[in-house]
Amino acid sequence: MTTIIGIRTENKLNTSIKIQNILTEFGCCIKTRLGINNYKDDDCKYDGLILIDVPDKDKAMELKEKLGTIKNVTVKSMEF
Image (cartoon, rainbow, N blue to C red; front, side, top):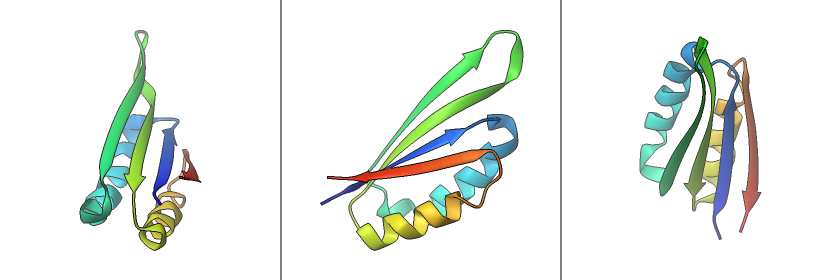
């Protein structure tokens, strides 16, 4: 079983460092990471989506909780 975590950032310029620090902390638990940017030409503050594959359910829930504490970040997950 694996858990896919979706991380949606509403203002990547203000949230990316916090997200990256948490992802680095859990780096050994992350199997796959995919980043999708929603760039807006007229604004350097853009939104984004990160998909994370975490095989360990307990670590996935811990990661999800930590990410959920960041303002302007939405975190959702699904299990396969």
